Image (cartoon, rainbow, N blue to C red; front, side):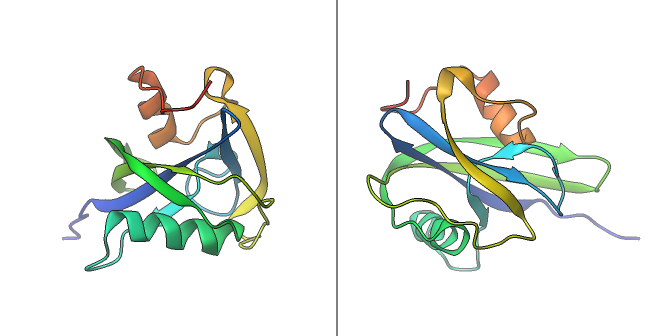
Length: 138
């Protein structure tokens, strides 16, 4: 019998000029949805360090973590995956995001929190539905 253990993800809410950076997912669960940069928390890694590492790996941007946000718990029934996603707020005032993982992300774009695109990646949708608003987001 296969036991599916929940994984821990880190979603990074990068704020620049009141807008949030989102990527269009491809090639993985959630393909076709808009998601925050982020990824899996590694063994022994601090959440903030994971945020910095994942954003650099995915976009080439250097961020400054400004705080921890809430978390969500999302089950991807079709893929038999369960993620607890820890959100981190960060600032990045310079540089343009690159597509450094073209097998996972089609494009990066900036959006206002009040006008996020559809469809949203489930953890982002769950977070948005709570009414949470990141500091500095419009």
